[in-house]
Structure formats: structure tokens, C-alpha cells
Length: 304
Ligand SMILES: NC(=O)C1=CN([C@@H]2O[C@H](COP(=O)(O)OP(=O)(O)OC[C@H]3O[C@@H](n4cnc5c(N)ncnc54)[C@H](O)[C@@H]3O)[C@@H](O)[C@H]2O)C=CC1
Ligand SMILES: O=C(CO)[C@H](O)[C@H](O)COP(=O)(O)O
Image 1: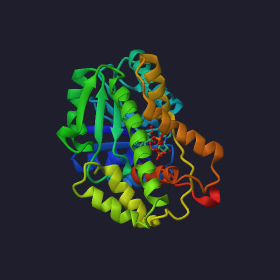
Image 2 (image 1 turned 180 degrees about the vertical axis):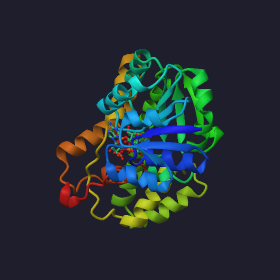
Image 3 (image 1 turned 90 degrees about the horizontal axis):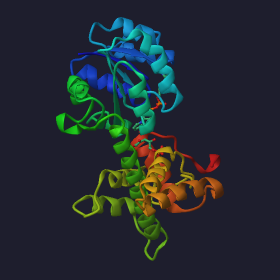
Image 4 (image 1 turned 45 degrees about the vertical axis):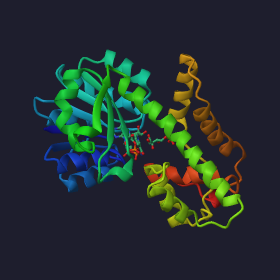
């Protein structure tokens, strides 16, 4: 299959590489010229505008957007739409709000798939988990691409109609916040508690057979190995928050109590309001974990 990929940052570039590895042809564009050149070196056909992506594709117009959520998605769609036929399929693999996705799907002539993408840049080698919403025929049509970008056929599924993919990803992120908070609190007690513990050894032991083993816990182990048991100069400043905010808003709307997710989100907000960089260990671990899975910048004490 031939796929256009728009947005060649941390995530989009992995879409490109995994599609090329899977035997697909890729037409690639980013507003950043270096990113375009790198994708060209990797084997994609790099073009210098969004219309050129559509023009370069054959009759089967399949495009994957991996740009920041919000206005950049609408801007890319506005540029792309006049160059696509009604049989085209566009995938938005970013963290868009599900209501933006349902709006976009209804505004466009072509098929629109909202695709929640989990795994982050650290999943380049093994592939992502993909949660897709939109028309079934379009999902089936893109299945070979999803097979390549995900861990394989079991790493993607259609969650339901337009919006369902990004809805499921929003809730996934809420769970992610709460899990990070739970690990953070446990390690904070171990760090501040009665024994002088090697937290990398604790995490490694837990990751081998314990009830609470997980990938996030493997990332805790990695963080302690790379930063030390006291997390070195990692600051108590936790960035991000949009998807967790949406999850809490949706919980209020649906009258589903989400105290853990709300508390985890509040910890992030507090870390920014009060953080002097020296504060709570749980927040410092959450800050470092965001680098582990998402390659998000780590706030260090000097710049907290
Ligand atoms: N980093 C992560 O762990 C994850 C990120 N996501 C989502 O994936 C999307 C992309 O994230 P990242 O790759 O991490 O961001 P990034 O900042 O690394 O890359 C975004 C790329 O889009 C390009 N871009 C921006 N506007 C553009 C436009 N109009 N046309 C073409 N290119 C444009 C930028 O130049 C940049 O190269 C976001 O929605 C993000 O929330 C989803 C899952 C995990
Ligand atoms: O979707 C993701 C992981 O699943 C991204 O890494 C996202 O940025 C995480 O959310 P936040 O930036 O609010 O921590």
C-alpha cells in the first residue's frame, strides 16, 4: 500500500519507518525541512507541501496525520481536503479530543479514522497499540498499514464509530496518570521511609513476577538505573495534562466518579503551582516517566 504521512516528529517518524519495514511505500511531509530530509534518507518519498502528498499518491489516497492535536490537525485537513477524492481515507493518529474527531469526520467528504496511539516513541521497535474509530470499510482497508504500525494484527482494533478511537485513548491516558501516581506514591514512601533502599532493585524485583509488574514499572526501573535511587536532579514539575483533563470532564458529564484520575491530575497542577524543584518524590518520578514512554522533556532542578 502507499501511505502519505504528515507530521514526522517523534511519533510520525515511527509510522514512516514501520510502514517502510512492512513493505509499504510512504510519501512524507513535515513543515520542518530537516524532518523531511531524514524521512527521505530512510526511504520515503519526501515532498515539500501537503497538496504534494495528495498529488504524489495514486488513485488509492491513504493519509496518516501525526501532528500536534488541535489547530494543526484542522489546518492540515483544510490544505489536504481540496486534493482528495471522496474515496480517500485519512487517519488522525494524534491525541485529538474525540469531539473534534466526530466533527472532522462529519465535515469531510472522505473517510476519517480517529486513531488513538499508545506506546510512545519507546515503542518504535515493537510497534504501537492502536484504538481506531470510524467506518468499518475504511478500517478494513487500512488494516495492512495498522498491522505494520501496531505490534501486529492483535495490536489494533476498531473501537466503534467516529470518535470512539480517541475516546478510548483519552480514557487510556486517564488510567496512565493514575498508575503513574500510584507508583509514585509507593516509591515516595520507600524513598522517605524506614530503610535505605536501592529503588532500582525494588523495581526490578517487582517486575519479575510481582502482581504489580508492568511496562510503567519497567520504566520506573529504568529511571532509577539512569538517575539513581534519589532521581538526581529530576524536578517535581509534571507537564502535560490535556488528555487527563478531558477524562475528568467526561467523568463529570457521565456522572462516573474518577477520584484517582482527578487526584493524579491535581498533583500535576499542584506541581506547577508550588514546585521549587525539590518537592515530592512521586511528582519527580511522574516527570521522569513521561520521558520514559513519550520522550517528553524532563524538567531538571535548575530549570524547574
Ligand atoms: N510522544 C508521545 O508519547 C505520544 C504522542 N501522541 C500524539 O501524537 C501526535 C504527535 O506527537 P509527537 O510526534 O510526539 O510530536 P512532535 O512534536 O515530536 O512531532 C510533531 C511534528 O508535526 C510537525 N507539524 C506540526 N504542524 C504540522 C503541519 N501543519 N504539517 C506538517 N507537519 C506539522 C512538527 O514539525 C513535528 O515534526 C500528538 O497529537 C501527540 O499528542 C500520541 C501518543 C504518544
Ligand atoms: O499519549 C501519550 C502517552 O500515552 C502521550 O505521551 C501524552 O503526551 C501523555 O499525556 P501527557 O502529556 O498529558 O502526560
